[in-house]
Image (cartoon, rainbow, N blue to C red; front, side, top):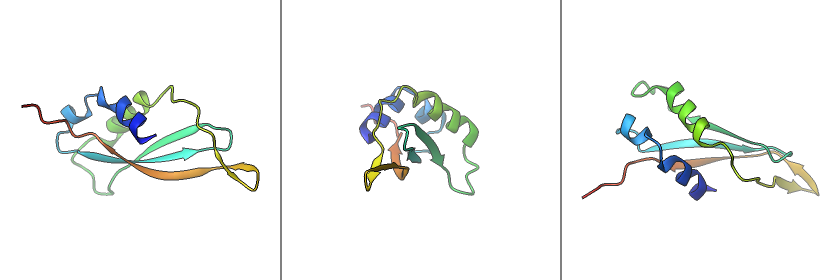
Length: 94
């Protein structure tokens, strides 16, 4: 999943817009009905970049995600949440 998120964000301009931003932690929620929700986690004092803009770019890029089966507990699908660090630092071109 981390690889797929990385691939979807590689084509974006986040690293150009915010060169000081190298990693964003994204809270991923997988619901029992296989729906997914992505929420970027920003530091409380983040004024170096526009969190609303970064959030909207992430949501725009993370659409059409393949179906993910929910976690199963005692035979019942349950909601699962985890933090996924997403590296957005531009690769050094030499």
